[in-house]
Amino acid sequence: MEYVYAALILNETDEEINEENLTGVLEAAGVDVEESRVKALVAALEDVDIDEAVAEAAAVPAAGAAAGGAAADEAADDEETSDVPDTVDEDEDEDDEEDDASGEGLGQLFG
Image (tube, rainbow, N blue to C red; front, side, top):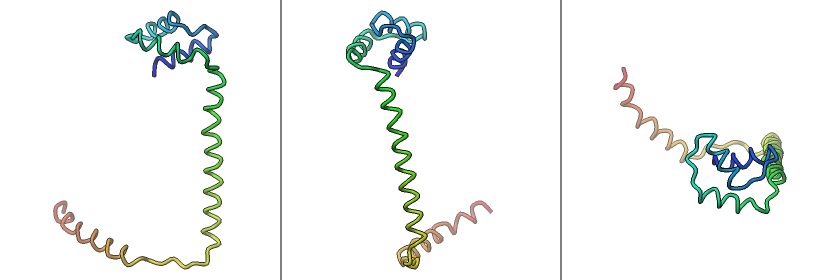
């Protein structure tokens, strides 16, 4: 991850993202630099507009949060307008009884 951070720092300071600059940032941060990773990252970022990629990545969570909030509001509206009475499933009652029975001895262990 530190390699990507170093590339972002270079981009933010308008420095060229090349092997020499990337290695310099990583070494300044105290990272044990692997030359093959530096070369791979420089090659991968060769045709990438980092500012555009960051802007797109920032837009995705915002859109997802807006959609999620709308879905939650809709679900709350559905619950309020539902005429179906709440019922308890018999299986749930049995599970509760089993949970109660399994915990009976715990009270004795701890007083």
